Structure formats: structure tokens, C-alpha cells
Image (tube, rainbow, N blue to C red; front, side, top):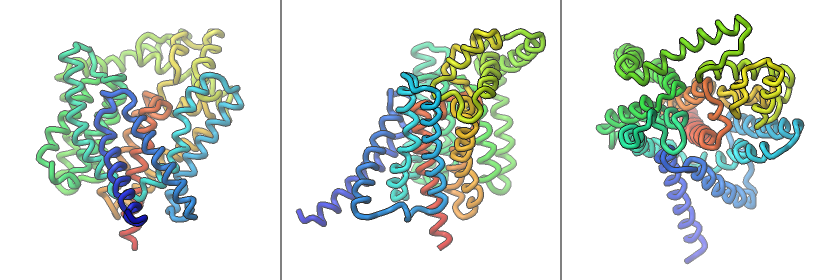
Amino acid sequence: MMESDKASWLAVFKGRFVYGLVFLFPIAGVSVSHWFSGIFTVLVLVSLWDLLRTKLKGVTLAALFRDEKIWLWLCAAFFVVTIAAAWVNGWERAQNRTLGVDIRYLLVVPLFLMLRHYRYAWRYLLAGAVVAAAVLGGQAYYDIHVLGLARAQGIYSPNLMGPVAALVAVWLMAGWSSLRPVRWLLPGLIVTALYAVVMSGSRGAYLGLVIMLLAWAVLYVKGRWKGLVLLLVFVVPLAIHHFVPSVQQRVSGVADEIHQYFDELEKGNHFAAGSTAVRLEMWRAGWLVFQDAPLLGVGPGNYDKAVQALVDKGEVAVEAAHHSHAHNAYIDIMVSRGLLGLALFMGMLFYPLYLFLKTFRQSPETAILGILHIVGLAVFSLTDASTFIKGNFVSIFLLGLTIFYSGHLTRVKQVVE
């Protein structure tokens, strides 16, 4: 085999391999342990090999668009601040554990450099979501009706399954025009994914789903359909709340716990009975911790230790120290990485959103996918910090945004030219 033929064959094989992994990524992450992280890691390894080859050929980062460079610098800077916060506060075993997740914010750089050359990666991700919707629905049915669980949770927890199912559902809605060969299947598959959201009982997923649907309806749906879709976005969740007892119980319990929490707080009592009240107490504890370390925080993995010091002083309820993070990504980043880390985090999350909105008219088909991806994770993060400190969620965020962001900017560049 001639050298040119060998290189051509290798390029074809690599392309199929990368597209195949992107297709597989959304399918079984809630059913197979380490699925999301494993595929992310394999793609990173391929990208590192690719980076080594291109560097040896003298290729630099100059080919990147300005907006691509800005996002990658934000990701890398966020990793640097994370390491600095851990180092300043004393590197221990907890920081060794978090490093395996945190380093992904740096490894996304070579991953992005590779995937930006795969302009159809977003289509393969959507194709994988078609299969994923069926898998999610099947997993939810199995958990509830075969295993007899109170909530659908898959291999991990409802707090992963619900948000993943919500993302898959809106990806399929937004990808309607791109999935013509299987369009006749989409209504059933979207309902199947929504069934998984409902059965997960994840209140963060409920809220994220509603906000994503509102964004989709306002930005993407046109003409007379917009009013109908907006009406459905409000009516369907109300109907689900009314007719599904488990949803009604979980949503209604939130208001009762919030009211009771603030009543007890006014009396000077540290009340944390119930998941919502515990979250509120953790957020209050996080604010108190932040005031003692505003610049770089207390370091990743040190939340529970810092809150335990407040518990020992009698300033917060003991339940607030029973969790490894604050169950709110913004508060957790602020506590662990300080104002510097929070500023970079907000830039990393919302700068691409700004670009998607700014260039929406030039390629609505790709812009809406990126917008929904960011909006969903931003809303999920209001009640959960796992979205940006746990391996599965970080892999979903980084790989999904890499594919949508690079794919969108490439199409925008072509339109401009």
C-alpha cells in the first residue's frame, strides 16, 4: 500500500470512528456505567494523537475563529483557577479525586481542535438522540414497573436521568428539520423521552425542560404555530402536575418546605427537614463560607469540610454538611473557586450563548441546538452542582457544546463568505 493510500485509509477510518462515537454518546449513558465519561475520554485520546501529528506538521491554533479561541481560553483559565484554588487551600486526597473531572476543562482544547473538522458531528449526535429516546423510555419503564422503584434512575440517579432525558427530548424537537428520514418516529420518541423525565421525578429536570421549551418556542417556532406551542408549554406541565400523583407530590412539597424553612429561620432556628429545606440551608451555608474566602474560595472538594466548621459553631443546621457540594452549581463554584472562578465559569457558560443568539438568523438550525444545550444545563444547575463537578455531566456539557459551537460557527462563517 502506497503512503498516500495508507494516509487516506487512516483518515477515512478515523472519521468513521469519531462519528460513530459521537452517535453512540447519548444512547446509553443512564444505563451503562461510565458510558458518557468513557466515550469522552476515548475522543480526547484520539484528539491528543491528532494534535501531536498536526503540531509536528507545523499546524498552529491560528486557524481557529476568534470566538472559538475566546471560549477555549475561558475553559483553560477556569481549569487553572481551579488548580490554584486547590493548591492555595492545601492539596489533599479530595483534590486528587476532583482532578480527574476538572482536567476535562483543559482537555476540551484538543477535543475542540479535532471535532471542529467534523462539520456533521451535530447530525450524528442528533441521530444518536433518536435511539437514546427509546432507551431512556425503556429504562424508565423498567425501573418503575419491573424493579418497582419510586423514581426512574437508571444506573446512577434520577438527577442524571431526568436532565439527560429532557435534553434528548428538546434536541429531537429542535432537530426536526434535520431528521427527515425518521421524522415519522419523532413524535413518539419525544413523548417517550418526556415520559422518562416525568418518571425520574427530578424537579430540576422539570424546570429545565419548561425553560428549554419556552426558549425553543420563542426563538425557533414560526407563524401561527408559535402561539399554539407556547400554550402547550404551559398547559402540558400543568396537566402532568394534575394527573401524575408523583409529580404533584414532589412539586407541591417544594412550596410547603420553602414556607416552613423561612418561618423557622425568622425564629432563629436552623431548619432542614426535607430536600428543599436542606438545599436552602446549604445555599445559606455556602454564602457564609464564601465571605471568608471570596477570591479563590475554599478549593474544590472542600465544601463539606468548610460547612462542618459552621455546623460546629452552631451557625447552620447539621444536615448542610452531609453533602459534598451545595446542590447549586453557581454557589458551589463561588464557594470552591471564589469570585475569580465564578467569573470564568459564567463566561465559559454564557459567552457561547451570546454568540448563538447574536448569529441566530445566519443558521437557526444549529444555533437553536446550542442555545437549548446551554439553557438546559444552566437551569439544571440551579438545583444541582453535579452539572459542572461530576464526570458524566461535565462530559455532556463539554462534548455537546464543542459539537454545537464549532458546527454553528463553521456554518456562520460559510454564510458570511
